[in-house]
Length: 112
Length: 111
Image (cartoon, rainbow over all chains, first blue to last red; front, top):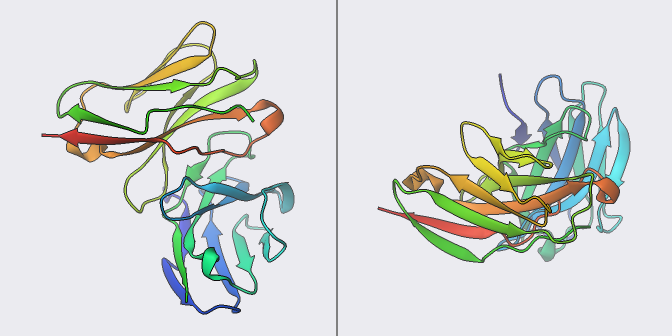
């Protein structure tokens, strides 16, 4: 079975632009979580979704938003990009959100 | 959120057991101990988790003390491919379902 998939793998944007990152969970998983990992640090929680509803939000500005679709895939949107948004963005899926989370390979975003 | 304390780094000889300690003295009764590892530039990989009892799977063993204030992840026969950052995470309870990563332990397996 395929694991969590994310696209694109790499992305370069300039300050002020908008970006959309995509995630497909493991088949049968209905919950998706997003994390940001800045170089040299551990991943930081951004959002969790279950059955298209937001179930948790980390300490990130409103420029960050997400949604989950009926097929349980998810998008993370970041508006008005800042240099500090350069990071590895990780998606993790789990059955309902309360079980073990399995991570995808991530999308590496560079903001110039 | 219950916090964890791990050594910053440790070395291990290839073929020997690697014992990775973690302190979580503020853990509450319904919180789980999870271990993940992250090999350079890849997504974190789930290793094992437990609540009270010791656990073993094909990757590792998890030993949790009786008072649950600390745990040890054991990689029975370390290989060079086990070189990674290992994260000990306490999850559940009031903190909810999110994973709160600390700095982790950077493990270097040497030949």
